[in-house]
Amino acid sequence: MAITIERDRGIQRQSEEEFGLECPYCGVYAHMAPQSVPDFDKLEETRPKHVGLVYQCDACAAPVFLRFAVKQFSESKIELYRNFIELERPKERFQFSYLPNRTEVIFREALACYSNNHFNAFASMCRRAANSAFEALGENGKLRAFDEVMMAQDIAELDDVSFEPIKKVLFEHSEGEDLPLLNRAQAGVLLEVTKDMFYQCFVRRGKLTRAIKVRRFFVQEANGGLSNSA
Ligand SMILES: [Zn+2]
Image (cartoon, rainbow, N blue to C red; front, top):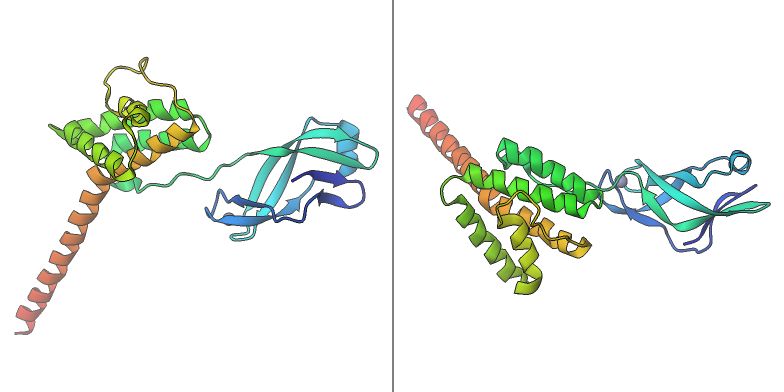
């Protein structure tokens, strides 16, 4: 997708294919239409190395900011490199309210690291989040969490070799110098496994006890109502 800004015609794309992105606001993979394009004459005059464009998400109409590096200036057009930087990345979501407070704070920051492609910062924060979760789970909590992770490995059919770094990040105890370096793919697995572990240890339990409490409440209400009317 080569993009040029032309003197009289504004932004032009070399191919007819639709330009789509995962929107950082609504999370939908949507078509993006140019909303705000810098003035050609101003760019020509100042010749910046980077150019910022604002697109509009077709699904939710939010503005999406992208930064492109300039490839070359010529008489009538400015050519941009096809790779761009998304200034706001889609956020990873989780039902944070079910987590213990400390774990919630740390895991939120862990997911922010992941969204910004800081995969090793993400791994460090996953270890901190896991440790705080084990503490909150109390005796045998770590063992229980380990069982859940083993089950996740089994369900997802991940082999031992590729799963080893994930286990190391979550369950080895030191301050972090032993953390393996993760690439994007491994960080993606760590993300899903950690979410699943927290889901099994906290969210599932929290949802179930809340749902049962609500059922009991309505039964009591109904009984109370009956005895009042009797
Ligand atoms: Zn959107």
